[in-house]
Image 1 (tube, rainbow, N blue to C red):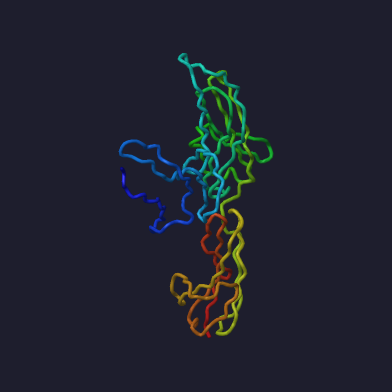
Image 2 (spheres, rainbow, N blue to C red):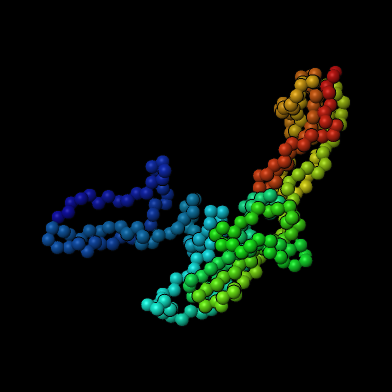
Length: 297
């Protein structure tokens, strides 16, 4: 008789502590009966599996969709059983469009950043299949392709200055075994909004006040163009010893006003604005006009 201990499985986390909840299971009985063996109860951990999120809440398992390294959907040709003459065992319907292609912009739809084509999806057809995508743009005068047709797994584009103000889409075309040579099934993609220019300074802010201890310096915010909203603004006062080079943060509050302290005597103080867009792109600090105010008394 098998006398091994019946140890229950316990799932542990990366710190070797039991997770909560533990995997679901059902109890079944082994069919091992006969000389030297007896039936044993065991746990079937696949019996009532429930997918859960990191907080332990039940979640819906989504169907698998193949993606590239940059998140773009990569179409996968359907499997079709073929006979010995390489003909479908069951006749297949014609190719039909299921979804439209879309643009994936992980850094925002901004000049100088990379976008990717997510191809349209199709049903039907008989292998072998080819899937290609093309980037197209439109500024109100109609859609025009500005790249060649590329395999969808590698369709990417660095947005150029010539695309600023244009909407962009990814058209997809597919062929199968029965598509006449030189023709394609084409699916127009979903249009983006207009491409914006690179995040850049528009106008510098101003700095006003007198260089006296106890007086208040006031700066106005600089303005910027381009980039991807929403934006985060940071305001700073920086200083340097008169006649030296390089301004440095000295712990002044990050506001639009600063009261001059006795410790600022002999320094030049400057205001500046820093802006960061929705995707973390930042414009280097912008100085005010005038550039600085000298603290002399």
